[in-house]
Image (cartoon, rainbow, N blue to C red; front, top):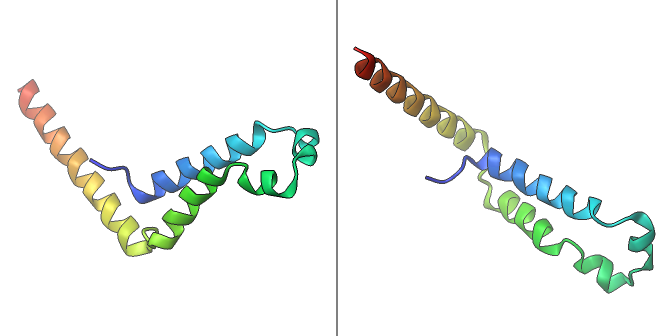
Length: 84
């Protein structure tokens, strides 16, 4: 089962921030323009890919939330049956 789009987006942004935070401003300034552009490029691309896919549209987010609620409801029903 894949992760909800919003969760993927949040995780991709966190990975991007973590990548940039791993480089001090002084070290960043020492990089040439090409090196600066290459820094964290895979993380930036992941965020761009998610945005380009348009998976964050409200209809997809609502559909994913409803699916999660259905799974939680089914799990709760199974738990009740097991306890009885």
